[in-house]
Length: 332
Image 1 (cartoon, rainbow, N blue to C red):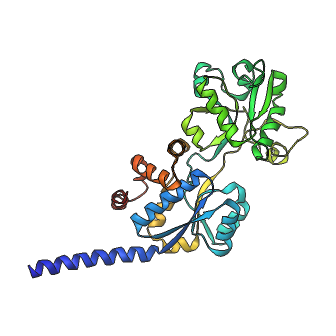
Image 2 (spheres, one colour):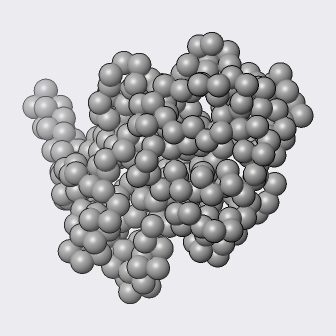
Image 3 (tube, rainbow, N blue to C red):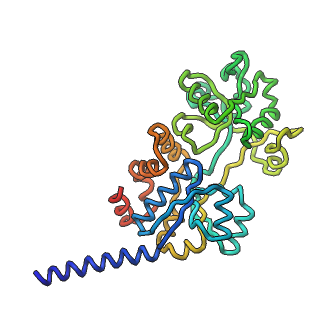
């Protein structure tokens, strides 16, 4: 019995020491919780997996694109920005990577951040000939304006958003007014979302700007239309994204590169946890469904992360080793 107890105690001690070594290897980790929902959920998915699967001691800190990048680049903190829309700081990020301060890990959104003009899927199914924005503009009767049903509506972003400028310029480039459309300002983010919800509730057509991943596109199935051209970055920067550009051309929205960015210090201390950060990615449809669940259940970012881990096991268990997955599942 003494031998059995001694061997049991030894095994337990070895296991505890191994766990302590793993925690010591990973150490303290700070993760930026950006101030939009998809990035907030990603931060807590990483927190739960790194803490329970790899023994890291994780702190979540408030973040936003520019201040988080500046802090990571200049101070090495926070250690991770799980959902970083890198186009906003591409040149500076490339320089930081080349000089060894930051590392661009996995593309968190496998299909990138997408913007564009959308229509409801039920309408696209009823009218399979509508593949492009130009096709939609031939049918103002399918997209009645809220104040004048004899006209079609292109729904714009609220004032002050960058997408309001691009949508207005594209509206003019497409000569949508000559095709019987008017540009509708919904006044606020809630108004924009409400216009889509109203279209689905009343089975009415809707045409306008939106982006993914979002709760709205997780809840309501929409189809993004082609502009029939490739994205022209030079023209976009010189005109499409410039207020009141005098001669706008038809252009396509860029697909935004969305990566996880980590500091060199994190990569050096994280050990095998770095393999996870280099591997994990999800798609817009999955994120949208998680965000829709959060919206319906008034869930926090942490609630959304737990919902994802509990309901999308087939996805996230491919990001980690089997033994790590079992530890995470046991902690949920």
